[in-house]
Image 1 (cartoon, rainbow, N blue to C red):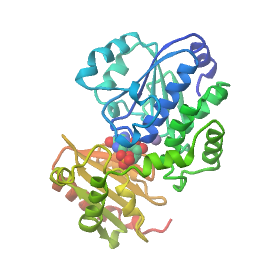
Image 2 (tube, rainbow, N blue to C red):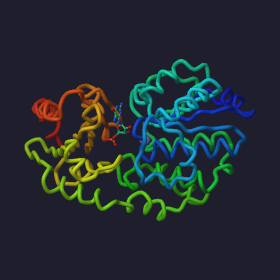
Image 3 (cartoon, rainbow, N blue to C red):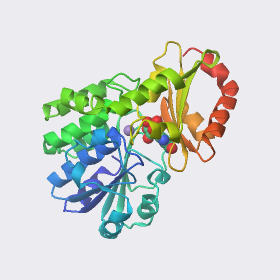
Length: 338
Ligand code: 5GP
Ligand code: MN
C-alpha cells in the first residue's frame, strides 16, 4: 500500500466507507468487495458495497450479498446519500473509472479519500492510496495482503475468507493460469486456515449450472465455435436472439471463452456476444500474445496480458468482421511459439 501510515491513521477511527467494483462483477470483483466489507465492519467502520450492475446468481451465496446495492433506479436515492456522506471510497478490481458507468462521475466528484485495489494493466491514477500489483492474480489476494500489512490478519473472519478465496480461485482459473504464483497458494492456504472451505466454494461457483446454461454451452460448442488453425485462433459468437432462445441470465456466458483456449495449439480465443446496448468481447490468450494490447487498441477495452475484454457499438456482424480483418496483422505473432 502506498502511504501505508497515513492510510492506517485515516482508518484508526470509524469511517463511512463505500466499496465499488466494476460493471457486471465477477467472483473476484464481488468476492474482494465483500471480503473487504466484512473486514471493515469487523474494525467498526460502516461499509456499503455498491455495484454498477447486477451479477451472476452463482455469486449470491457470498455472505453479505444481501447488503449490496446495485446502481438501479430503486437504489439511486440511497446511493446518492451514501456518496454525500462517504469519507473513503474503495475501488476494487478495476482501474479506469469508465468501468463503473454512472458511478464513475460520483467517485470523481466525491471529496472522500479514494483507494485503488487492483491488478489490471495501465491504471488511471485517481486514488490517494493504491494497493496495485499486476503480478497479483486477484484483487481478493491484494485485499488479503492489505489487511495483513495493516496487522489485522486475525480480523479476517470465515465469511471474509470464503469471499476472498472465491476471487482467488476464479481469477487463477482454479490455480491453473499462468498468473498462479507461489504467493497465490500461500494466500489460499492462509485463507483456509482462517475458515475458507475450498470444496464448498468450488461447488457453489462451478457446479450450480442451470440446465439452460448447460444447454446454451452445448449449442455454442456444437454450432458456434469456429477454429482458424492458420491463426491459431478460436472464436464464438452469440446474438441476442440466441441468448433469449436459451433463456440466458447474467453470467451464463462466463467461462465459455476458455473452451476455445482448451483446444490443442490454439493461442487466442474470443467470445463475442450481444448485450443490451453494445457488443461485448472477451479475450483469452496463451503465452506472450497480449490480449490487453488487442482489446485496448481496437475494442475500447483492456485487462491483463492473457485475459481481457472490450466492447463495440457496431453490430455483432460488423464486430466479428472487424476482429477477423485484424487477424492477418497479428498472424506472425500468433504463430510464434512462446
Ligand atoms: P472477461 O472476459 O472475463 O469479461 O474479462 C477479462 C478481464 O478483462 C477482466 O480482468 C476484466 O476486468 C477485464 N475487462 C473486461 N471487459 C473490459 C473492458 O471493457 N474494459 C477493460 N478495461 N477491461 C475489461
Ligand atoms: Mn480480478
